[in-house]
Length: 92
Image 1 (cartoon, rainbow, N blue to C red):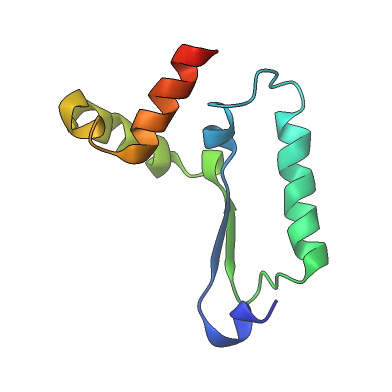
Image 2 (image 1 turned 45 degrees about the vertical axis):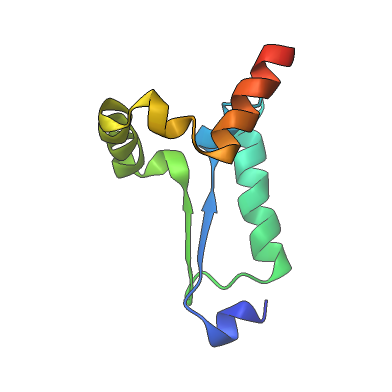
């Protein structure tokens, strides 16, 4: 992975975000572990980069809670990704 040679890299397995699209969470832990192993097999060097699992960092959920309390829905509706998510959830 050449990026590690030129940059300070941070790799995150976003297992909490996966909960928004995964219907069955039975294999989530196994899939998370397999992704970490795949990244290591692909050449990520953990001694030179940061690699973490989103749900293992409590500040992620703390920040989500704080931001969700102060972010008005009106502001969110201006974001294209939010619009797409709402539209797709209405279709299914």
